[in-house]
Length: 467
Ligand SMILES: Cc1cc2nc3c(=O)[nH]c(=O)nc-3n(C[C@H](O)[C@H](O)[C@H](O)COP(=O)(O)OP(=O)(O)OC[C@H]3O[C@@H](n4cnc5c(N)ncnc54)[C@H](O)[C@@H]3O)c2cc1C
Image (cartoon, rainbow, N blue to C red; front, side, top):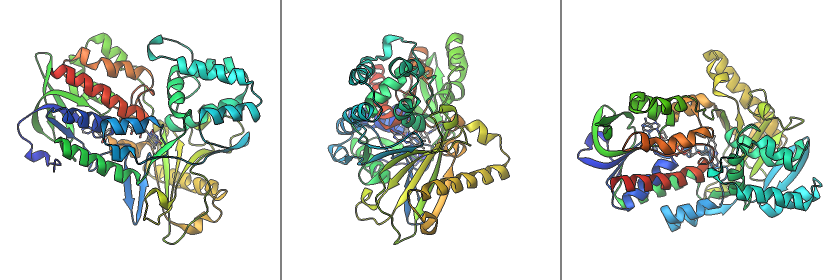
């Protein structure tokens, strides 16, 4: 068993991985499977980070299992196990319901093309050219085009088309039309071209299977173990302080917040002034809110789809989508078959409202506003599940303040940083020998697939450094 108490840790490690989100977990697993001596320290009482779950009464709520691209299957097979990869299944029905259109889609390129041509009357050649441009986008191109420019080029003045193509991404990571088109291109090409997938057995099973792999590969891991300081000598990392205890290690791979890693755990004096100037310009994605709903035992509802992008807003407007007063929300519906043998129905509603809005409230106002968010969610859900109120056994909500409390991400950041953060994250070890970062950064390397794949990239960099 590789789960240990931090008090019992002794000896020297090749690498300390700070944070057990998907980036940190994947890196720890890969490095330990390659024979490196790895200690993973997670400050929370469970691994998984934002790809987590929690229990209330008989319910298990999945925080971020709404869906991910098919690429996750390959990533799990290559860097975790075939058994985990075999549990990736396609989400059957994804619905959009708003005043501009109501459609059902498989979230594949073919289906989006069909919808754009048949329902939105766009030329097939235009759709193909749009997809071709997305497919050709490359992170290293240095293209300054924004999402707004991209959509205006192919679908001028078509707010309805922009809504179809953009709303899922805005819901997921708070992206707006002003983001670089490259972030949309890479996320879209990954996400909206071969369908949306989920993990059969739920997040709890996935984390358990990940722990089994860490055990098998001999990685040590500790929960309730918080990185407080990175120790540096002669311009090189040589250890870390975790829960007040000194851990000797040759490298630190931080899966914690990028800004905290640089400014709090390492200290800005260890980086060039120009680098720190750039670090201070990095913006975080800080707007995720959720409402979790569990049904009374024995209560059920008919199949209404798996993922519902709903809105009462007349038009797509990313500012409104990110505001507490917005009338848009995504429902992820979990039927009992997500956990074979279980009989529980849960619904997780996701919406956006910035950290700043919540942080400015008094505690009374904060409680009232959370209740109001739950109430408004129930009103909206009643349209799809009539009588939902009578069936509910448990309801609670999370704001960016909740995400901050559980993950220690500044601003409750749920999808890491905006685009500019990726370059900072990737260049960290060029600035300070032995310090690496992994996890959601730059929108491109975020979400389950992005974070896990970035874990692989960072693990390879650490491995090269260790020699
Ligand atoms: C509400 C919501 C819904 C989402 N839905 C989806 C979805 O449907 N599909 C999808 O692909 N993605 C989704 N995501 C995004 C996805 O879950 C994240 O991008 C991904 O899980 C982040 O992984 P990460 O490696 O960046 O680490 P994180 O999950 O951010 O984990 C970082 C870990 O580091 C720990 N930590 C922080 N500081 C310290 C410290 N000092 N010492 C020790 N440990 C520390 C934290 O506790 C945490 O466990 C969602 C996110 C949210 C918030």
